[in-house]
Length: 134
Image (cartoon, rainbow, N blue to C red):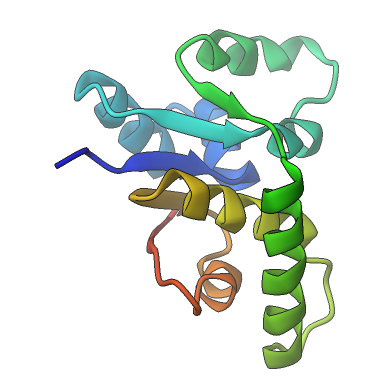
């Protein structure tokens, strides 16, 4: 059986900058075990700022797969976002998280490393995914 791909949302990717963070330890363990790590390109837009501190992200990207948002991923993300928005009280745009969830569907089996486990659970209800909070 193929080991699951670890898919990162913005919080999961940002964990790279905090070496004492649980997420950073999980990422290090995944790399040691040869597990594939994927990050949707849109996550880079939320995380990278153009400052010197971004160097840690650029180094980490060398060992990761950056996933483009295809028309299929984007359309599915729209469907997931719409369904999840109906079930939640707080109004916040779920587009990037929906793209992360949709990317994980494409890469299944996948584990999502997220800072928003509640939202990610809503987004993956139709096709439950393993979610690890950071």
